[in-house]
Image (tube, rainbow, N blue to C red; front, side, top):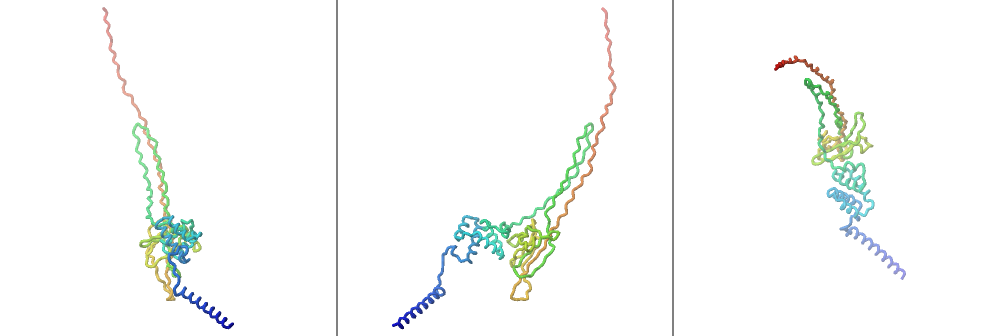
Length: 321
């Protein structure tokens, strides 16, 4: 009787184990559970990035903050602002397309979280055509007309005062262009230096291509120099570069190119490094005013007296009666 009970218990536990294992295999591999129509808060962590990108693009297109805020609230994350910031910085570091980075930066800025890397994407890049500054031409000195006779001359008019023309902003000159082959994304790298070779931060660099434009600012990566700035290139596009307030491109036709590599299984893209320095314009010399003309005072009028008139006296004759 004891052996029969033991055999029954062994059979029960073996059957239980086989049933559990069979149920696990069936539930996870044969017919797994499929979730449909779940809330955004129930999404997996890797899908939160896609959801935040969609919310950013919708906000940039609709400009409806109430709807965008509702879409973020359904995540039920009290720290959603920092999450949007981290996702935006990660997208900038990965070199995502510029329209997406502008949309994500706009949403992060609306949530009150702004970083230095987002500043260049918060404004819509619209290059402006530079208007030439008119230069003041020197006014010729007025010609003094002699005073009329018998009239004292007026006080002579002083010569006009000439104001020096203000110097226009410096024009940048391309002093170096180098093709660099190193691992990583193909980039346009800008080095802005002054006359002493020191980096110049805070200078806007415009990059344009067919049906697109973007800008970036020097000095956002101080570990690579105060005048350093870079932009990720996309294959199949030709880029033009303009610096400062001028909309005229200084360099055109920059494209991605393959570099020779000893490893045939590894692809290396070339980057273009451009070194720019400002050329101060030559100031326009101010005209030197000539000596003041001396007014001519006419001689006083001399009056010559004429002959005195002769008085005729007629005698009066008185007759006596």
